[in-house]
Length: 103
Image (cartoon, rainbow, N blue to C red; front, side, top):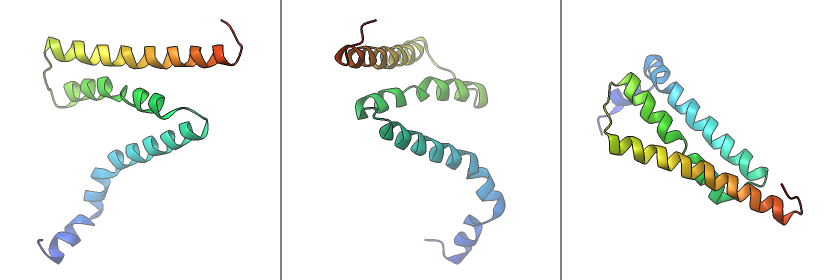
């Protein structure tokens, strides 16, 4: 603990503005998750689709931080994204078949 000086530094407007985009992103993600649950989307689907942020964050880290990724990393991110989309599609088709709609 660094005392009251660190508390004063934490509440500086500049420090708050630096963290504001990240905190806004977390707030939007939490509200989207709650909205998905209210629409009846299952927890497994919400978690699975939540993994789609990984390729976006990898692309942004490559662009902003100049981070390099190997071929294996790129393949793993691509497969994870593809599996998440396929899982969501198959689940929606199974739910449609259970409701009596064939397509």
